[in-house]
Image 1 (cartoon, rainbow, N blue to C red):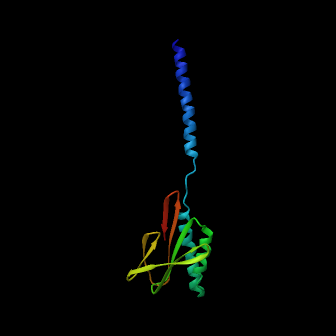
Image 2 (cartoon, one colour; image 1 turned 60 degrees about the vertical axis):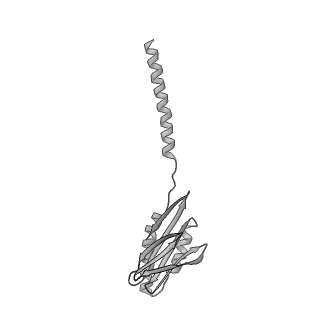
Image 3 (cartoon, helix red, strand yellow; image 1 turned 45 degrees about the vertical axis):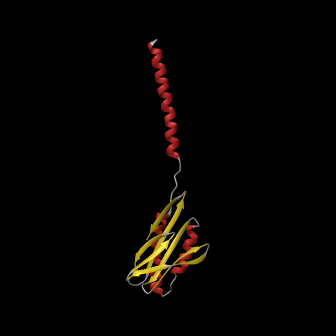
Length: 149
């Protein structure tokens, strides 16, 4: 009789272990949301430096064309605000469906500028010469992801 009770106990433990294995595998294999903005931030930093270098070497400002093309490349779910220019003529803009939209910027004090994007203020230090900054935002299932460069 004692052997029969042990058999049922071991069978119950084995069944529980099999069920737990399925639950663990299902939880592990669920696909989470992934924001691409951190990869885009890194790529945008590299590519924009090359575009600025080209503009300086050839006296050909291509940053506006680059911003339009890059905004089209990343898609509609990601918003990029570009801040470009020198300390005397700084401008902030974004592209929505291929159309350039200007964004107000406030120069608080000598060398600093504030940009308001979706209700949040971002401060940038203006350097001597050409400047290029950006704010990338993406919303996934109610969560907002932001990268600044």
